[in-house]
Length: 437
Ligand SMILES: [Zn+2]
Image 1 (cartoon, helix red, strand yellow):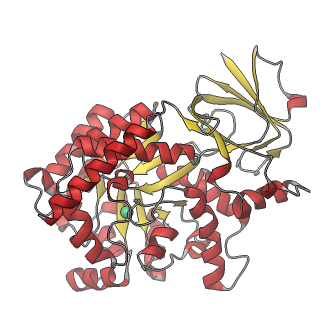
Image 2: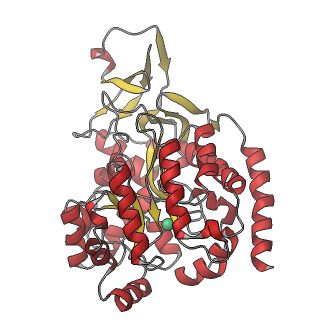
């Protein structure tokens, strides 16, 4: 059965960046079946919904550790290496599947109510995480974390985590549905070469996406150089990891030669400007990446380094920083910024979401158009500019994933936010106390 949604404006982010004012969007079996000017639409189906407002693709978060809602704001002011070793990993060492379930459940509410319809997650306790994902109905690419958690016992070793990634892929990978499973080696500096070879082997067997932190800080680059004699991208190339689909989070400190390695192997980047800023890591060379044709999406990173899951902030900050550091207002265009947050992010994940055209997943959001930030609207360029430079997550009223409505009138469904807040509050305290004992 087809449902037709009518809106004051439909922003498609298709190849031509088509905008229809007013617009109609037909959805059938979880996918877009038609989009365009209502005056030229096919005969109306029985089910027509008058949404008004602005309809656009849901945002795509390409790099998250969303269950870190359990650690929100922890370790503020520390550099990355001390933040991980002194605060994050000691708490995560005591986390269970159930903790991660509640952390993810709360995070899904936050993501969805802010208009994020896809999230790529790198975390341990994947079973707990996916239970929350299935309940929330969000689209998810899970790359189960692989690293040694100091003090976590046999389940905290990279060998166990690789075997767990195989099991999660076997049990949950569903490319026709909402969940795909890859693998998430933490980084070159936190893993031995042997572990990275095992990861590459899993990717060869399953075809899953490899998500890894790369070149996040200057200090990391020094460590990798001392240990391997070259940069992290060069290590990954040498080990054959880049023969597979790779998403490199951060990628802040890349040389021209590193960028060439990315372009040669079609490595995609998850750009996390806010996390990189808060941890004092630096600003990634996004404009240089795009000019080389490298696929780039935007990421919130975890809520201990951001500290929210509001991708609208990345949407604004990415072009803002790119322009500021290059002193060039043309460094990253407005259309391009919106693309990074939607279709570009999906392409970085190997998904066909992030765009409203026939055949694509019906992952879309509605924004309240009756707001000062949408005035004036003299032409389509104004609408795009307002979305990137003036709008924010507070305008998101309704959200659909695969045609199923998950947020209605600003409220996520099922509304479990109060219970999730209670659970995360008490579990966060337990993890903090255990890490100090
Ligand atoms: Zn990260």
